[in-house]
Each structure stands twice: as structure tokens, then as C-alpha cells.
Length: 81
View 1 (cartoon, rainbow, N blue to C red):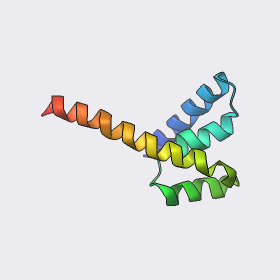
View 2: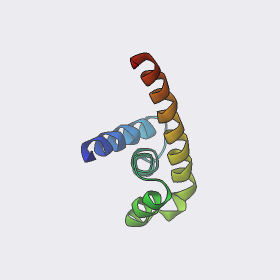
View 3: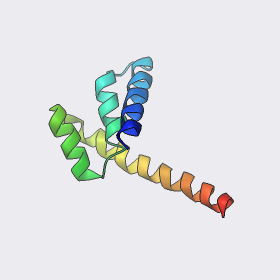
């Protein structure tokens, strides 16, 4: 739900700040854009924040994040079933 998106955004913003990135940009691309529904969600998030120049990072986050979630889920479901 939305509480997961908020937690992911805060966590990614904090980690981004610790490694020297801008926390808002990190929270948008790594937190929100990984948790939305692909390219149209990336457009909506970045358009609302007026940060369309981060589209490449949002796409990278969406694709890598989705792949990592699928890999982890395949391991979890193989042990669960």
C-alpha cells in the first residue's frame, strides 16, 4: 500500500543522503519509481515533482528493482512450496 511507498522513499532518501546524493532525487527515483507501475508511473511521479530530467534513473530503478523482486520471489516461493 501507500505506507510501503512512504517507507521505501524515506529509506532510499536516507541512504542516498549518507552516500552523498540529493535525498529528494534519490527518494523519487529509487523509492517511488521502483514501487509504481512502470513507465507511466515514472512519468506521473517525475512529472508531479517537476524532475523529468531524472527519467533515465527512474527507468533503471523500475527495471532493476522489478527484476530483483522477481528473483527474490522465485527463491522464496521455491522454498515455500
